[in-house]
Length: 204
Image (tube, rainbow, N blue to C red):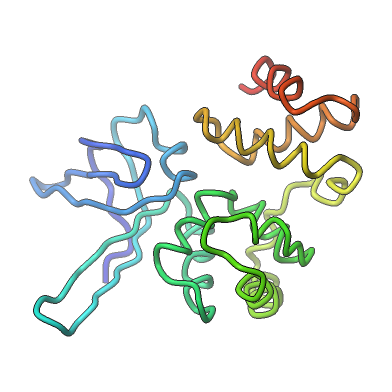
């Protein structure tokens, strides 16, 4: 079993990273969170989840890479849920940071999960029901953002749209959400475009 691969980052796209180590190039499927975390780095360490699909005319062997053990653990939990496959789990982790996902699951926020492409209401409910206790028992939820409990004080529709836009612009969802929440706490009546403009000046 491969625990992690550390090597030179020779190629990178939002969905794939190629690491070269000992003369071998490993192609790993990644999430947008991991893409953001390793972008611009020369040497990278990715925690690996291996998928072997046997049967049919050809067997397939796929590697998924994660910038943190927490993200990999969440991925492994997600794919245990009925209706959540490998690509859907990666889509969820591309839309939400590990801490955000823990917050969404622990608070039972079906709306945010449903906003992820490919996730319907029933699947969102299954994710919350199946994983809420597990993320606590495994200690994954310990890394929840300190301001997570104050999210309800802001306009969630504006927050979600602003964070989504910032993510599309290449910023990591977690720090983007933190900045957006602080802006909306101070100025709750701002429009989405105004929030984004202010956030662009503050995100480091």
